[in-house]
Amino acid sequence: MALKTAQQYEESLRKLNFKVYLQGELVKSPVDHPMIRPSMNSVKMTYELAQDPQYADLMTATSHLTGKKVNRFCHLHQSTDDLVKKVKMQRLLGQKTAACFQRCVGMDAVNAVDSTTFEMDQKLGTKYHDRFNKFLLKMQEEDWTVDGAMTDPKGDRGLSPSKQVDPDLFVHVVEKREDGIVVSGAKAHQTGAINSHWILVMPTISMTKEDADYAVSFCAPADAEGIFYIYGRQSCDTRKLEGGDIDVGNKQFGGHEALMVFDNVFIPWENVFMCGESEFSGMLVERFAGYHRQSYGGCKVGVGDVLIGAAATAAEFNGAAKASHVKDKLIEMMHLNETLYACGIACSAEGHKTASGNYIIDLLLANVCKQNVTRFPYEIARLAEDIAGGLMVTMPSEKDLRHPEIGKVVEKYFRGVASVSTENRMRILRLIENITLGTAAVGYRTESMHGAGSPQAQRIMIARQGNLDKKKELAKAIAGIK
Amino acid sequence: MNNRRISIIFCGGCNPRINRGQIAAQVQNMLMESGYQVGYNSLDVDFVIYISGCTAGCALKYNHSKLPAAVIAASSIDAVTIDEAKLVTEVTKRVRGYFE
Image (tube, rainbow over all chains, first blue to last red; front, top):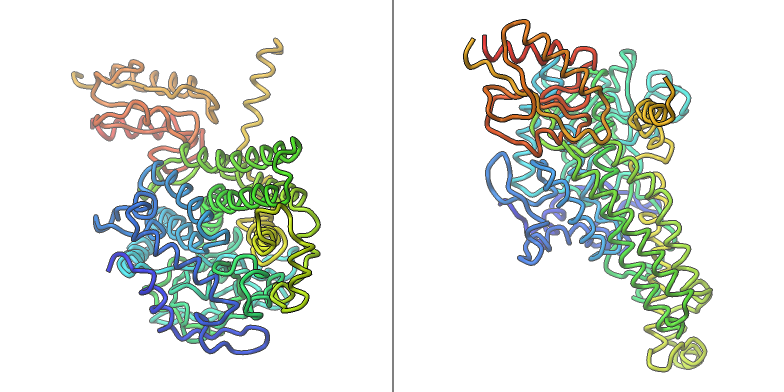
């Protein structure tokens, strides 16, 4: 089975024995939980579109391992065209879900682990790359969703992993056995973890020799013995328990994050891809972060497309579409959104081949891309709120609209242009609310700020890669300075 | 000494992270001292050294051939990062390794 159908994906999740806590309770069936299911639907879309001939060019690729068609999320980029298509695929999925579709972290993780394990083996004589390829082959054949798990809780940011008061604040090896390792700790903010079949763990920072126990990378089934999850809250999340379909803003799709806890989890050697090689932890982090910073030049743009469309629709429903300042604000939103896309495409087009054969983005441009993502969605959201008007956050609930008596009042006083129903006006405003400050704002705003590394992390990379000495040479040459 | 014709092919040089001209000159000198013929920007040779100023690797991207080659792109040779100071000796080692 190289490509799962959407239904097969959902059924495959049902077979997993997840241990998930949500609002203090153990969840019986995550797939069917009303607060989790929309996020599953977003991942499901990555399977559904891969089956659709209209989208096959972006959603699928040819495996370099088998020559078979695989979902692009399971693919190692074999060219700069593949890198470009990745960004286009992410824009497409952002447009179709208006949410985080979660599967990128796994794609970015396998691409980073592939080249890092190859170079590690070349230098140190280890055997990680062959092991990794076996995992990748299985991932492609089974069309797994894989959670690329990097971010540790980190505790005191001023202390290295081995100096923390609590050793579990970074995932680490607690025991080495003949047949494998035992790990403990946790990974925070794990996007899509509960919609994943497997997890691929990577270290979160560049490590030194004294942190060797923390320089660990491995894969494990998402429901492995000893792994459990605590589901993250989102703004307005309990609206999903109310049963309506207007107030949630986006009834069908969403994203999720969770704390992933490892309580003495056994990992067989065949699933270990780094164990103590601290000098390569920085390379793995930098490459994963680079790929993920590229990703945001696609996914956030797709969600931005929906938000801009929603703002333009709201302007029409409000009767303000012809106002010149509204038109100008929509132009500004499109300009910002396409600038993000341009960065995603640029860092892909300027990518290059790694020693293992897969392709990696231009790191400088990927960091510029993500730095813009920490800013532009906020401005796009601000302009959307400006156009939408205050009603977006003051209007009554769907239950009020449906009420036999006050419903008529709601209908009467919340109508905009006569040709559009009050219900439709409420729907578009709730969608804007969802993306700018509801459940989807997790992905569109704060994840844009901190996901794939907070702004300062990109500035460090830009400082490193920006070629400032060359710029000084250029200036001196023009100025006649010798 | 026949069939030891080397060509150095450059990228366009829009934003180089390394001094391409200096590296090429040093490589040329070292190889010519050993009896190689070294020219520039030709594919009518036995071995190509691609020199790109950054990792985008435009020298190879826009002048691809099936000839044996060594690829410098910023501080890397054949996709493996090395110190910039070692680029010249490493690339000449590869040329000699191919012919000898």
